[in-house]
Length: 204
Image 1: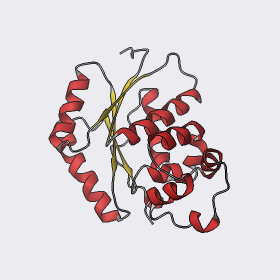
Image 2 (image 1 turned 135 degrees about the vertical axis):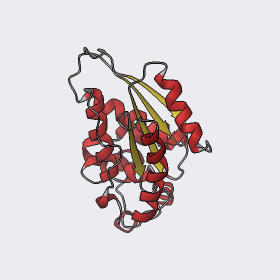
Image 3 (image 1 turned 90 degrees about the horizontal axis):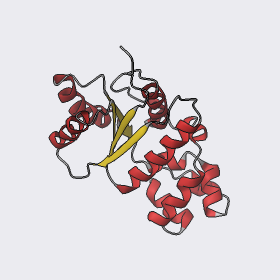
Image 4 (image 1 turned 45 degrees about the horizontal axis):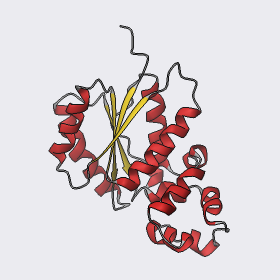
């Protein structure tokens, strides 16, 4: 069967901050690939939405001819056990309704700030200063580290950092982002990756 020339891909994320970084990095990954046509991306926020509501969003987007879906969720923890439990809560209903070949689950361990912290060069460009060594080792509290480095960690600072982020630099230092990048590259050419892969190196 002939595939549609344009890939329609949806990202489901917690909030505005995640939407900003996921979209910015997704387009940077697209720019590195030779595609016959540009994909169509849609990003929906599911903060405070019950799990059933997330699946309703997927079903709605299926009616609009979206072919692949990424559910990116903050874990709030680096515990392998907790991350696996959170993934299972999402995975089991997807398998029941036979959507597992259309959805990738990407844990943000413990939050999307970890992706940002993986790109030291982007942070130095955004802050105009070198990242202090002692600050760099405090990655267990990513939002506080970024607030201390940039003065604030609001929409303005987040947009500034997003401009400088480089996917290849992040991939080498964060397994969660590497899983996202690989799954997106597969989705762009119409291949379905595994629903969820536990990222050992993303969990201390």
